[in-house]
Each structure stands twice: as structure tokens, then as C-alpha cells.
Amino acid sequence: MKESRLDRLSPLSGAAAVLIMVIGILLFNYYEFLPSAESITDYMNNNAAQVYTGGYIASVSTFFFIWFAGSVRNALIKQEGGTGSLSNISFGY
Picture 1 (cartoon, rainbow, N blue to C red):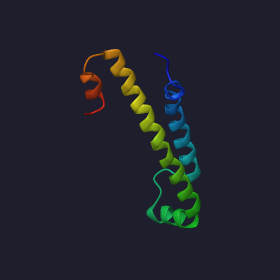
Picture 2 (cartoon, rainbow, N blue to C red; picture 1 turned 120 degrees about the horizontal axis):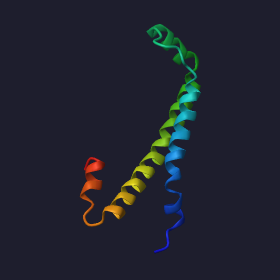
Picture 3 (cartoon, one colour; picture 1 turned 45 degrees about the horizontal axis):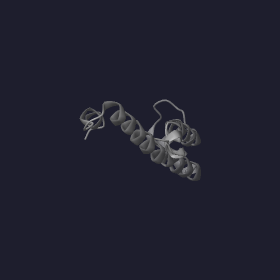
């Protein structure tokens, strides 16, 4: 059976999820180790647009992560054959 274009690109969705998440986290641009509560509050208030943008971009990566998890489960079921009970257990069903 011939694979569709989306099936061939599905492994790349995992890389896309990681890349988009890293970009979103880098937009936060706050790397102080164990900062005080006042320091965090000041940073969030002074850089609200940047924090919102980073959070939005990082949340977009969820779509790609779910797509990747689905393609991994599909590949496991194909290899396992039958009912796919081990594949389902590995994904917590």
C-alpha cells in the first residue's frame, strides 16, 4: 500500500514539536536560577507581550506533539499486528 504524503511527513512532526517548543521557551528569555517572587512578577509585568507570545508559540507545539504520538502509536500497531494491545498500553489506554 502506498503511503500518503502526511504519513511520510509524520515523523518530522516530533522534530517540529521540539523546535517550536524551544522557540517559545526562548522567547521567555528569563534564565535566572531560583529567582525571588518579586523578580518574577516584575519580569512578567515588564515583558508581558513577549511572555504571551512565547506561551502561544509553545502551545502550538502541542498539535505537532499529538500528531507525532499518534504516528508512533500507528507504527507500533502495524508492527505488533492483531489488536494492538501492547501499543495501547504504552499510550496509557
